[in-house]
Length: 208
Ligand SMILES: C[S@@+](CC[C@H](N)C(=O)[O-])C[C@H]1O[C@@H](n2cnc3c(N)ncnc32)[C@H](O)[C@@H]1O
Image 1 (tube, helix red, strand yellow):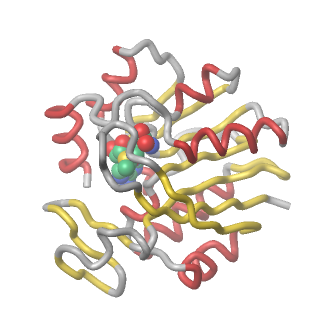
Image 2 (image 1 turned 45 degrees about the horizontal axis):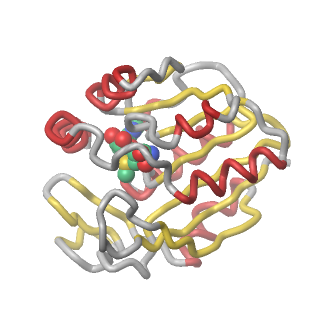
């Protein structure tokens, strides 16, 4: 996993440019309405979404497996704490967060890692905190491409394994972690003209 992302960031740099994802903009408005101030962003990348929260006055902490991505974030002036390592090794600190925003990371993990990751996120969330995840949907064009590893999990490019969710899989995996909403989210690919949007599942969880 690390080699795949490290070589992509090293060779392609800020490959998704700097505009935040629409789902991050959506999360921002939800976090604002819930008076959330301090968030964790696992799979921080080079901070194209993290920057949106920072620019809006949030205190942001990231987790990112690729050192090259963290270096790109630093080069673009982001100074927030970004823990270097895999989310499978969480926790990296003993902080509790008001919110967690995780874009397109959970589907990269295997079943055991996904469950442990959700457990780790949930335990770093304050009471009344909110976690928002986006994940690959079975409705997206890539579903079924590449080598099938297990049910609904495919190696779609060398070293890139993706699990594709439907509503049943979301309910099964998130039901122990305060799921309050799951919706289909059409995420435009803003950095490539004419590219088909990506169909994601957007999951909102709240801790009692
Ligand atoms: C699809 S990208 C999304 C990046 C970022 N959220 C964005 O949209 O700009 C997934 C990100 O998660 C990171 N990543 C992948 N596996 C990881 C892991 N096990 N632990 C931490 N980060 C990981 C990748 O390096 C990459 O930055």
